[in-house]
Length: 187
Length: 104
Image (cartoon, rainbow over all chains, first blue to last red; front, side, top):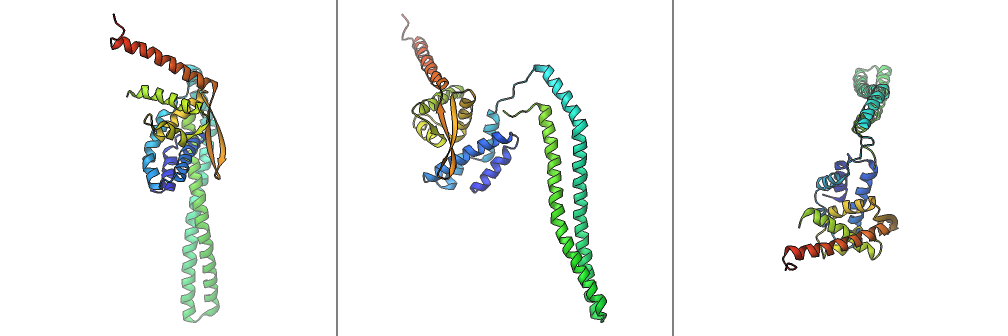
């Protein structure tokens, strides 16, 4: 395992932590890694000394202090009521919007593939017509077909990226709602 | 050694290293390792805990083109060392009692 892979796995395993805490833990191990490298230790020795990133993350997560309830049971009830109210008024519309946009982007991505296939087919048809001798129509078919195929190829990665990003946003919104209801706060 | 006892001892070991002057993760481990077993994953929660209770303060400074976090002991940290020394004296008396050395 390389340093990059080790830290990537550590970050993933610490994803339950708030960004600040995760950053502090990663910085701590990164600093130790660099100090050990400067003292002549090899990458393999350092990483095997650290242990599996998942075990390191488990230790950090187990040591994490539980948040102190603000006002006992009353605070929990108020948080749940407030959380559910916010989720209904803001969370559901935002999630619906994000999900619709993601679905639209996915459809546009599929359209890009369709445009590419249609363009490619039209070009092939153009070459077929050209072989029969009808030159003007054939050249037009080839030109339009290639242009459509190019446009389709451009559409696919753009909308695939948008679809992925929007679905990730949906997931993050749900995770944030869950954290808020569970009373998880930044320390 | 009992885990909780070791945890408490390590806290004081870290503080006693910092009593000599500010230090950073790698050096703290190197200074403590000859006396008591300590690993990177053990030190991290200790430093976090000591910082959260105000026994140490931190400062990140540039070193060799990267950031290094330095830890410095506070007055509260020094008091914790004194408290530990007092506790050990008391333990000594209890130990002598348990082992029978002070019984008439």
